[in-house]
Amino acid sequence: MAKKKVLVDVEIICEPPSHTRWFSALENQAKEMESWIKEFHEFIRDHRSQDPVNLEVRRIYEDRCEFCQRFWEVGDDGCPICCDEAVKEWDNSRAEHKLQLEA
Ligand SMILES: [Zn+2]
Image (tube, rainbow, N blue to C red; front, top):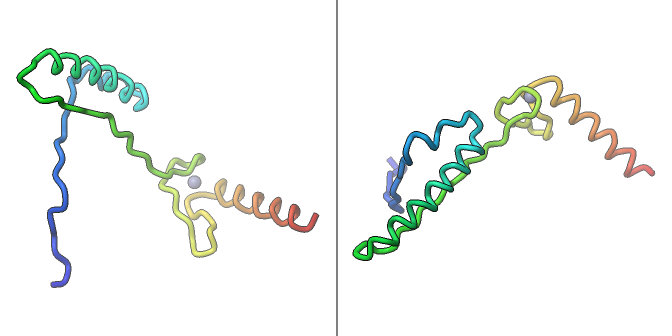
């Protein structure tokens, strides 16, 4: 088999204390985690025998449709395939673009 699983990098995954997850909005969770990291960095800095450690919050984004919240997918012609609202908006923006070209 040509396909082969190769180890290319190593990283550490850190789960912060659960209170950082008490917010339903993910952006607020991210901000709480960043504030926890700041405190944790200060704690580590006070322990001189420990080499510096750097943690950071990584926000993971995904393209979703603003109308139906499903994954953003388009067909070969660039037209979204998730819902009628997205198709309607795509049609309208194409019509506008065409008018601008003609003007
Ligand atoms: Zn949609």
